[in-house]
Image (cartoon, rainbow, N blue to C red; front, side, top):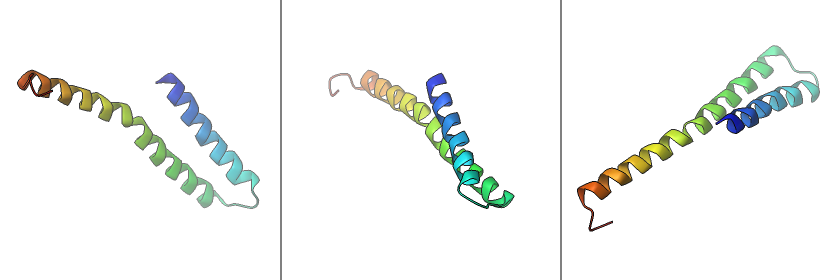
Length: 69
């Protein structure tokens, strides 16, 4: 998780840096890009939770019907 957080923090910082350094931009542009990147980060951070639920469902299915799996 820490490697994921470090990488995604780097993506956030890089997006702000590239937005500001690309030319004249107002605060609205920067805030909009930061919000989009936050949405991306939120979706990436839910992948481990979905994977954990998938493993749990597989385990439950195997316990309910051990000969089919």
